[in-house]
Image 1 (cartoon, helix red, strand yellow):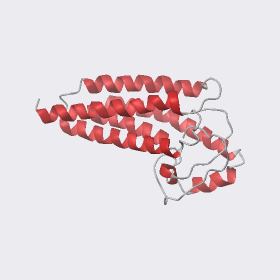
Image 2: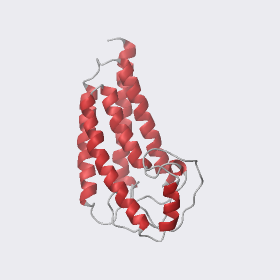
Image 3: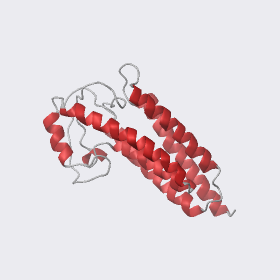
Length: 202
C-alpha cells in the first residue's frame, strides 16, 4: 500500500475517533439530565455504542479499500463533527436535556445550525453513520443509519409534540414552518432565548 493510501486510511480512522469521541462526551458531560435516562435514550445509547464499535472495527480492517473511499468518509465525518460542535455552541449557555426526557421545553433556539434545521444533533449523528459506511466501503454499516435513524425520528417527533403542548407552541409552529427536521431548508434567521429553562436534545 502506498504512503498516500495509508494516510487516507489514517485520516478516516482519526476522523471517526474524533467525531465519535465528541458524541460520547456530549452524552456524559454536555446534555442536562433530570433523573435516570428514559428507555428511548437507553436504546439510543446502546445502539449508538454498538454502531460506533462496529464502524471502528470495520474501518480499522479496511486499509485496502482505496484512498478515495477513506477520504470521502473522512470528509463526511468532518462535516458531521462540524455540525455537531456548532449545535453544541448554540446551546452552550443552556444545554438541552437528553433525548426522550419528560421536561417541558422552556426555550427555543433559532440560531446557528438551528436557523435552518430543527434537530442538528440528530442530523450530525445520522451523517456520521453514513460516513462510517462510506469510509469503510461497507454498505452493511448503513444498518446503523436505518436503526439509529428510526430512533432519532421517534425522539424528534416526541420533542416536537412537547413543544406543541408547551407555552412555546405558537413560536415553535412558526419556526417549524420555515425549517427542515433533519435537512436544512429555508433562510437563516437569528433567534432568541425565550425562557430560563432547558429543552430536549435536538
